[in-house]
Each structure stands twice: as C-alpha cells, then as structure tokens.
Length: 91
Image 1 (cartoon, rainbow, N blue to C red):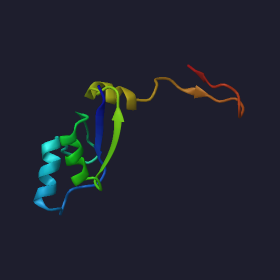
Image 2 (image 1 turned 90 degrees about the horizontal axis):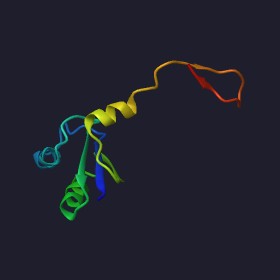
Image 3 (image 1 turned 120 degrees about the vertical axis):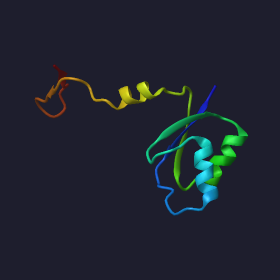
C-alpha cells in the first residue's frame, strides 16, 4: 500500500478559513509538519486545494514519529578526513 507524505512548507496565516479547514482535516498543524495518508481520490482532492502550501510525495511505508526523528539524527561520533577522494572513517 502506498501513502502520500504531506509536509506543510508554507504557513496558513492570513489564508481563508476554508483553506485552514482543509489543513486541519488532513491533520497538519505546524509548518514543516509531516503526515501520512493512504493514496485515495479523497485525499488527492484535499491536496489539490492546498497544493501551493505543501510538498507531497508517494512513499511505500508510513513512518512513525520516532522513525522520522531517527532518520534526521546524525550518526554518533566524528569523521576524520585525510585527502579528497579517499574513504572517510567513522570513529
């Protein structure tokens, strides 16, 4: 099953109430907030109403909040770079 990954990239401040209600119906609360919805015609119609405000992509799996946070977290440790083009080592 595929999902829409919807991220709010522009603020809804000052927009009509109808537009803000669509965001609320999708469950998007904050700027840069991401939600996942199954691919369907209903959700696609809602996305088309707010297409200027959001970034949408299709993904195979909906990630949980913990999985998204782990994806953004950098690796522990540090890298030592020797010369350009050589392999970096993780310590």
